[in-house]
Length: 334
Length: 148
Image 1 (cartoon, each protein chain N blue to C red):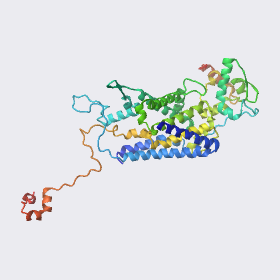
Image 2: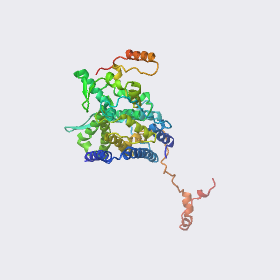
Image 3: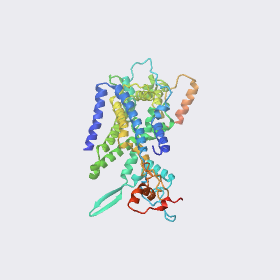
Image 4: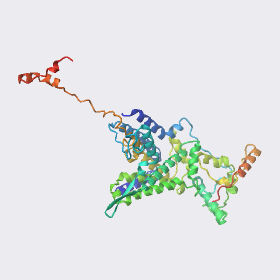
């Protein structure tokens, strides 16, 4: 059901833009208002999420470890799986962010007759890393529309990406990779009944939105051509705050709407893992609670104790009336 | 806020990174590419909008038709026959690569490989001998890198 809902949503995006721009001619709305608004939502939303997370106290070291922690000297410890110093935490985070190390440990559980068998399953890691790096390269490549003169490094990325010179304009490798990876990530959710059961519309929607984004981009580059010079005049206008909606095909507005929708959706969806990974207390802490006494929780206050002497002082009259002995030590001078 | 010493630099880094296009262009004028349009010719192969959008696909089709099929005449949408040749037909009117092709290609950072094999016409202005020298040098130094 989730997949159907997400698919209908994405198709509705296309129809809205097609009607809005193609029929009603609302080019300024879809070309200027929507992108600016979406970028503002993205920027403010992400900063808000980060501040919101930073307000949450983490009183305990809740590191997810999967290796021997630092213990006695002769016991070999695992520096990355159970980091002890901040440097080891940084290494662990770097590998997590750039190499998706925790996904690499992904296993597949299967019932083989009566036995539950676990096996290595790197496909998720491969699909994820292919998708993320392709998307990142595509993002960097798009800087050619937002800079003039275009930096040499961006041009080099562009030329490496179109290295095979297939077609004209040249086919980008990353376009092929990201489509393949997205297809895998989508089919993976559908193929496994258990995974399908736990997949929600909010799992499918980002996939479909990025699908729409990539497909509209590929179509625009290779099939429904638009005048790219006008497009760049428009994007440069956006970053100079002097935008003028371009007179190009609807496909460009669809592409623009998809990226706007994705930006606006970012802070509200699972996509915030982009910054959330840095806020994961299970990853960004050192597992050293055996060696270091950490600050107690901020709401922890020293409890108010009542000593026996104070208690005796409070009920002194009642104690004497009922003939209880009085501890004289309380009145001795120290 | 907890760990403000780490979180605030992180937020600043995030904001700086995602606003790269805004601050790298701040204060710079937005350039507008103005390719030189030949004055003595009024009509290109197809309509102006079509040429702006699809000239690369058209040229690719021409290359295929000429090289693979030995077809040298293109009939445009008006029924006018046109010689399919970049050097002899396109550049006949658009006589300057620098003032026509390169203007937009540099602007959008497109890197067409036409001139790996073809020789652009002489640029007219400037020191003719110098230009010729540099052009022949360029032509001889550049190997025809791709024959698709």
